[in-house]
Each structure stands twice: as structure tokens, then as C-alpha cells.
Length: 103
Length: 400
Image (cartoon, rainbow over all chains, first blue to last red; front, side, top):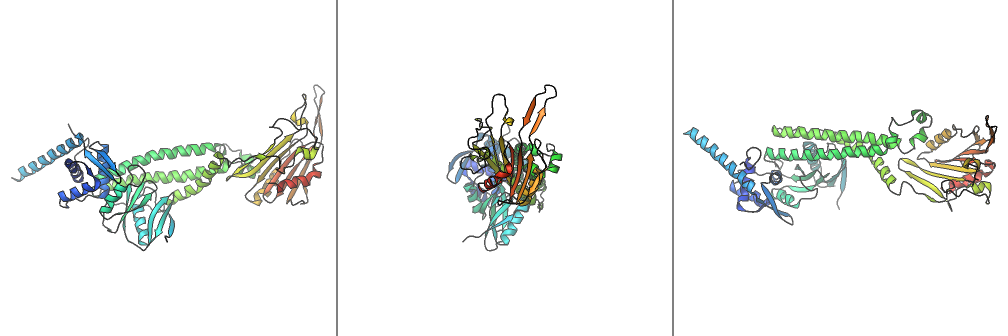
């Protein structure tokens, strides 16, 4: 069962969703995570992050857990995990296909 | 000390690339954006700073988002303010800074923003209907054009024609500005998906500015109508108005009906309707009489914004013959009045051809008086010589 209704995830989407696998995260923690994980390769524009959080919430891939002053914290939902897993499988098969062709 | 500067926004409200580049240009000239209200943008005067400006479409509640500001600040963007409840404005000294690094997320943000503005457009449409509906009687198809031609001051000061025309024109500009804004937003979204950075459309902001300028007086007028400011009656006692007892004597009995013998002065006026005073008093009448069989006095006063309008209104009144009134005589100015016109009315006796019964119509007269921009129209039915009471009518002006 697909976790996300429309298409595959873009790279920023993939990494933002991945960040939640570690637990509850707030916006700044997400950007730090993406930056560290990709060693700065994936540039996460602030507008992109803001929009992705709103989009993921709307698609019920993540949910807000608490609002503490200026900080909002989110966590991944079951649907979000499925979407991430599905994307991971897609990427794996992409890599396999590519490797097969190279050999 | 902070110095604030105000500018008319030359770009449409949803023209993101145009607004971003304009706000950037302003900053380079030492004008730092603080807020936008209607067609105006407010700036703080600072040293010139070349910056990259980003407008972030607001996707949630229209209030400052502290967390988002922190996220932006982390990468060097500074929060400047809110743009008309539509965008958060951020600026970065890095001229190559990008707030959106993923076209799909930008496309999503724009799509959501477009839908939001489309829904807001329905509210604008509703405002069109409500405001135009309120002044519907002033619509061109409702106007008596013949009357307007011969009595323009009376027609245009009825409180509906001018508000309707201003509202219709104002909404035309406002709706056009909104519609073009939505079209530009669609074009921008299309350009983003094709990886192109479109240019803004300078000049479109003036549509909104003109629209707001036209609608502002109508809105003030409407608020006055729905508040106590539009109608402000006051007691006859101490008003200084000439009464029927001044003409007929202190013992003259007046009608007990409040609608016929007002114990108050009907007084009002709004921004688009000249200040007016109305008053009437009828004598008490018997069982077999009508109000028209007894002496009575009706006063109608209006103060116009320009003296020339008052002069025109005097001419308009003087073209009206009411219940057998004679020609208007132009009398010499006196008692502080600038114009005095008087039309006497003779007693008339009508005989019913079938029954042979006779009916006597009261004599009297009409005064049309002007002092400055104020015009008084008095219609009197009774046996008294109205001219003798001219000083008393003139004194009514002092009480206004």
C-alpha cells in the first residue's frame, strides 16, 4: 500500500522525512540533520523546509506533537514511514538497475 | 529616531518576482520595508543595503511565525515584516541566497497560495454585492435621468448616486487588480515549473491604489450610515428653528401627532450626503378636516460642500411650483442672507362639478433662502404674510 498519494519524493522531501526516523524534530534540528547527513550536498532552502512541513502535515506523513514557545515539534506517522520505505525501495531498485547495466 | 517613508506599491499584490525585486531596489536606496497596508508600503530609512528579498507565502495563521523566523535567521535571512497578510518578508545580504531549493516545494506553496487567494476573491465578490447593493438606487438604470438633468444638485446629493458610482468604479479597479494578480500568480507558477524566473509587471499596483482611493469615501460613508454619525436628530426646544407658533401665534394649537408636528429636528448627513435638517409642524385639525386644511410649515435645509452647489440648488428650488405657488420673486439680500426668493401662494377655491361642494385651499408662500453654502426651503400654508417673518427665518441659519 503506497504511503504517499502522488509520485516519488524529491531529494529534500526524502531527507526531511528521513530526519523524523530519529524521533521528534523541530525545524532547526531538521536542517541540521540534513546538512550533516549529506555533508552539505543537499541544500535545504528555508522556504522549502517550511513548505515541506506544511505539505507533510497536510498529507498526514507527519504530525505536530507540541508547541513550545517559538518551537514546534513534529513526529512521523505510520503513513509517513510507509512513504519513506516505499521511496527507499524505489531508490534501491534504481541503484540495482543502474549497477546491472554497468556490469 | 526612526524615519518612516511611505511609497505606493507599483506592483500587484501577488506579483512575487516584481515585489521581491522592488523591495530589494528600495533597500539598495536605504528604504527598509516594515509593513504594507492597502496600496501603501512603509519603510524605515536606513543606510543603503543591497539585499536579496524573499516573499514567503503565508500558509497558516496570519501572524508572525517565530519558529520560521528562527529557521530563516539560521541561514542568514532577516525577517522584515508582513506584506498585507499574504507574505512574510525576509531579506538576505547574500544576493545569491535561495529560499527555495526545490521547485516542487515552491510549486506546492504557490498552488496552495493561489487557492487561498481564489477563496479570498469570493469574499471580495461578496463585498462587491453588499456595497453595490446598499447603494443600488443610485445605479444608472435606477436614476431618473430627466430629473438628474434639470435638478443635478438635488439628484446627486441624495446619498446614493455618488456612492454607487464611486463604489462601482472602485471595485472595477480593485477586482481587475485582483484578477490580474491571480493571473500573474498562475504565470509565475508556470515559470517556476519550467525553471524560468519571470519579470514583474510594474504599474499594476496603481490599479489597487486608484480602487482604494475611490472606495475609501464610500466605506467611510457606509460606516457613518450604520453608526449614529449618519443621523443625529436633536430637540426642537432650544434649536432656534422657526415654528408654526412663531407664525400663527403662541396659542395656535398644533397637531398632537408627532409625525405631523415634530418636537425634534431631523438632522443628519454623511461624507457623500450633504448635511441636512428637516422639520415640519401642522396645526391641530378636526374630525372632518385633513392636515392640509390647517396651517402648516415644512422646512428643508441642506449645507453643501461648495457655495456654487448651494447657488445651483437655489435655482433648482426656484424652478419648482408646489400646490399652486406663484412665480418666484428675487428679493434684495438682507438679514445676512445672500439670496432670498419668495413665491406667494394665493387662496384657491375649488368647486366639485358633480356635487357642487367647494373646498378652500390655504394661501401661504415659499421661501428659498441661502446663506453661504446653506440653503433653506420653507413651504408655508396659512393666512400670515410670510415676508413679515423673513428675519425669523434668517435667524434659523444662526442656529445651524
